[in-house]
Image 1 (cartoon, helix red, strand yellow):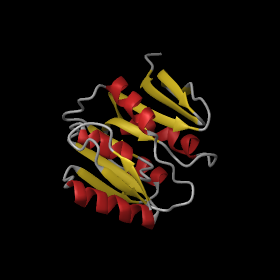
Image 2: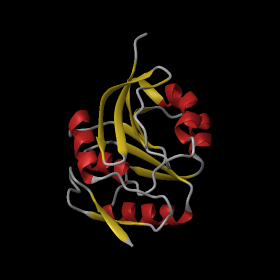
Image 3: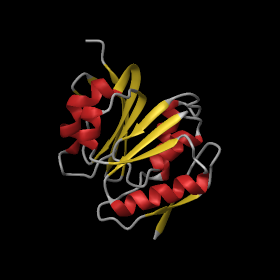
Amino acid sequence: MSRVRIVGGQWRSRLLDVASVPGLRPTPDRVRETLFNWLGQDLDGHACLDLFAGTGILGFEAASRGAARVVLVEHDARALDALHKAAKTLQAAQVEIVRGDAVRFAQSTPQRFDGVFLDPPYKQGWIERVSPWLDRLVRPEGWLYVESEVAVDSLGAWRAVKQGRAGQVHFHLMRRSEE
């Protein structure tokens, strides 16, 4: 089993186990550092959703930086087991782990979030499938983080305001456009 390191906040440098799940790829440290520099290191009071949690590293990074509530959605049993162990190890009471399908969760949850992490398995059309539900998931002034195998300039009303690339990973911070 491999491990991933939390890069900032109260749990900085803590290592979390990564489940052996085909296609699971933790967001690289450098990308996470850039993302949280864009967002600001302090997420005090924020509600965040990690819709395709996988390792949960994006959600745990947000909780480490003060997010009041973080929901991790994952369907794979091995990944879920690792998420529960990580939450217990970190004593992350603000982290809720939901076993389920990301699209169904996006369609049905009454919850709204300040920020949503969208880092689905590549080349399976998940971003397109969840895209119609983004406006109901994210509060009007909220943000969307998208990680994909290709550059994404827009998703419906969402526009990339910052973007980068690290190897084969394209990452984007998106905001709802005023148009």
